[in-house]
Length: 147
Image (cartoon, rainbow, N blue to C red; front, side):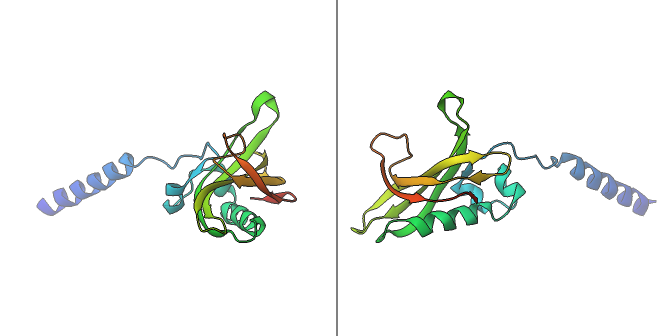
């Protein structure tokens, strides 16, 4: 009888544990922060659709960096509505060093299609983003590409 009680208690404890776990949430944003890279499952729409999205985007950007650029430290990716209802814009921000070895914040930005998670032709440079004070455009990335 004690064995049956113990088994029943274990079964109930197991059921209770399953009920306590929240069901996985469907990603609802396009933001990818540096800490998100360590998550077991992506919490952004684009990587949930295509696991290689961010890798492909990073490859596009690093291939277009100006000669002499050193290093690449991902900061974040975000896609948001542009002013005036002109669609969406994707902005990738990262730290990199110029030929002088001085690390600085850089960005790459371009039009973003939320239905397919594709980023069109991009422009990039130094600063916190294309609309940030003091930003300077220094390179371009042609074509459309996933990520």
